[in-house]
Image (tube, rainbow, N blue to C red; front, top):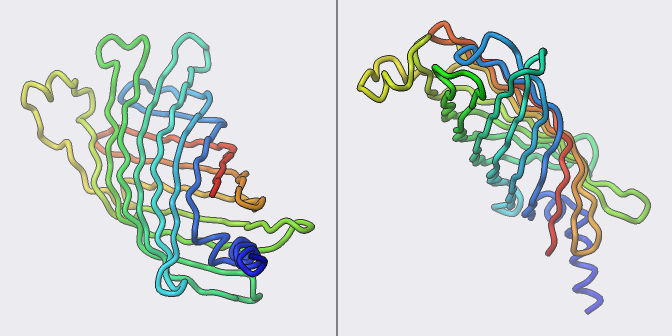
Length: 252
């Protein structure tokens, strides 16, 4: 029994256990800024709230790592005058495979990188815009992701410090023509709605920095997430970003 407990604690303290066998439920909360010229030429500011789930597993004796992330985020933002609100609701699904390099510079520092696939979709609703009150957001991407994580201790408690960046490179996204109503699309005007997304017309990036605190069979997470979404097409301009505190828990 003592040997089994020692083995479990070792898994929590080293990368194979602390970083690569994980199922985490998280809640995000923070600041959001939304600029969508289809609805309004003004930038709206407010709060960001999100729920997400992350699963991570090591493969091939720890040489590879796969990661699944599923989530939804809601932004409630208002204009500078405080007399109109936007509501943005998005769902997100991403999957990646990362090649791991262990013991880089120090035995406890590890890096990983690999390809990523992402699907993200939702709506933005304008409370007072009677002509076009809603716009649809939808895009799929192929890109790259990379992580750096350090397994260390805070006193006797094992912790994992991790940074991860997700960067879409190429994909497809939906955008109507400038001043085109969704009623026109419903009547059959489907021209020029799908667009090739690349860094010339679209740039998205998500950054995460945080710490996992391994408390026996429970892991607590505290971190920071920044998300940027930017695209310009059909004389339309979207520039959204958010900064959020991340809190998560994983119980074995």
